[in-house]
Amino acid sequence: MKNYKKWKRNIRLYYMYRVFCTMNFIMPIFMLFLIDKGLSSFEIFITQAIYTATELILTIPSGAFADKVGRKRTLILSTVLYAIGFVSYGYSSTFTQILLAEIVFAVSSAAFHGTGEAFLYDTLAEAKQEKRYKKTLGTAYAIQSFVMGACSVAGGLMAKYSLGLPFLISALPVALSMIPLFFLDEPKRDKGKDTAYWCMIKDAAVFTVSHRKLRNLLYFSAATTLTGFMAFMLYQPMLTDMGMPVEYLGVAIMTLSVAHGIGNKLAHRFEKRLGHLDMLAISAGFRALLYLLVFFARGPYLLVWAILVDLTAGITSPIVSEWMNRYSKSENRATVLSVMSMSGMLSFTMFSPLFGLFIDVYSEQLCYLLLALILGMYVLRQLAVAVLARRAVATA
Image (tube, rainbow, N blue to C red; front, side):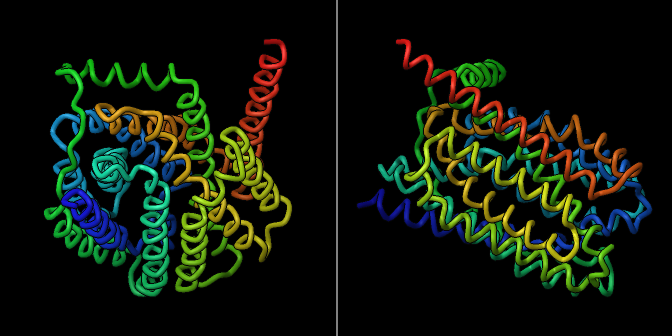
């Protein structure tokens, strides 16, 4: 009974934390802010590459840090840095200042990646409620998406007066999110062997890449993170080029967040109908088709295709997260999830500056053809794996 009350309370507090922490108002104007400061597409994606490179370097150590000293302390550290990052960004006016603000954001994000979801899973595992994870995480994601959608509308209105104002206002709810964090109960977890810090990181990395199903999720994360980030960042300049006023951008981004949230809530219904490989291949293939539609038929349909992309991503993310947690172990769960997150960051770090150069020379619209090709190659890999697996079974 005690465990039941504890996990119920923890879940409520975690939801409250995510509500406040995701009340950011910058979603509809982030790219416009950077363009307003005089940055080219190449410079913009250099800042994003530095962000992801910093996150890449720190994500696995931060996951190991969370496994070693506790998830709650790591989440508190992440949240403090997140608030500082918003304030730093709001007062930035040069490329160097923006770069420093991105680094602060990256350290915060690295501390959160893997840790938050590992905390949630361990809370449910302690109460023998692991089967609720996918639905619980889907609800958490949905709350975040709906909150960010509502805040996007407000952010677009703020941007009429100042593009820096949404950053500064965003720091306030993030600071408030510290309150529910302090009341969380750290769930018990298997700490495993008393392993040295760097050995624990190495063991988790080896475990991840040698596990066939986790390795497959690494490839999926790399492909979808790169294409998803690039597509989202290009929506803003493309919509404004079409003549959409900045205050309406918030409404447009809100529709994407709502679509993502609806997908999160529907996620637990889909895995029952689709297998592991099929789910990943269908998700990636559908997104590739939508990016092709953006390339061939931009116009007013851009927002329709973007909504469908976010709906698909929303359905997939809780399922993939549940698989990651299921295949990892209690003593290395946060570290393994950090390794998974690292695969997406590595792909973005390597290729986003090249995409920036490509956009400066050609156009945002042509970039969507490249995104479709990347996902298409992943789908072909999935099909090849499925065919080889069936042949192996047939000849056994």
